[in-house]
Image 1 (cartoon, helix red, strand yellow):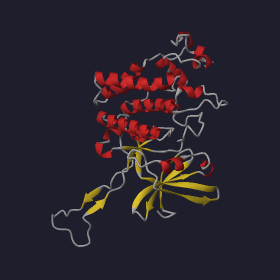
Image 2 (cartoon, one colour):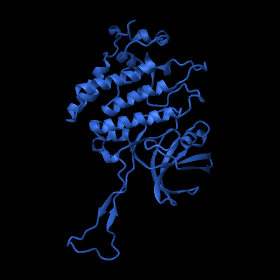
Image 3 (cartoon, helix red, strand yellow):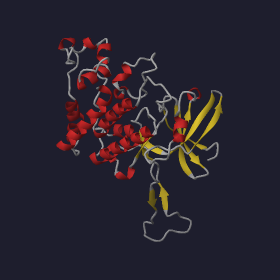
Image 4 (cartoon, helix red, strand yellow):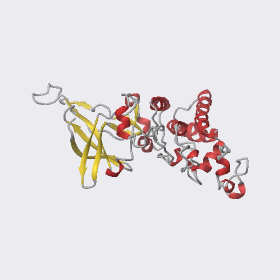
Length: 337
């Protein structure tokens, strides 16, 4: 690719430290996405180094090239990324029920597990495995036909290319849109080389240890079990219309204890506000006005099968439900017990 691909005046999105633009690779004759990072983020992110050292994988968004662009604000690292369509989060938000067809949800959850397994096998923590994108897909071709059925005259193309459909409702995703890609490696790191005590994911996906890590002690670090926790929460959201934990009605840590029970020591004794919500056995103290206490199965019934029932969509059977909850509990126990 040339050092300066042709930028189109189309902003595909933005994040905390970058903007993403549509571009044309003149050499390869294909569309790409250019992720232009802020000048001050260059020294904070390992994204380029990690993507360059990763072996190609069909579930990992590829980095064909990168270049530096100089502006009055400094040097911007520009990542030439494989083109992708909207995120899975965006697709779910476009559907009023926020659900995927069950066979699609199963396939996406399996793909995500394989993608995270691949990264962990390379000693890499992604940092936010909820960043799932659909592949951009091939152009939409529509045939040109004459209303009288006669052959097309010379110079008239046989097909026209329709506009790109970036957004699509989650219940309209079909197998042709699969596999998904795990993207956005801006928070990725090697835990063997980098100490990380902050989680750069959505609040309802953070593991409980984030609240108890001793930031002054080099012994403590977010590592693979922490990402397995976030992976489990993300899979729960993929199968259902919401995650197992919420920040509504109180803090995320309060909700995690409400669903899973007492924190292991020494976290439980270190949680200074525990007595404001819970008894010693981690049951809700009703005198505090704390929210109602749900079990993980009750959360599942509401956000997965009941949500699917309300929308006339296929539900998980009893055996699949038990296996699913067993898997989710296993991901939680990696860091919780």
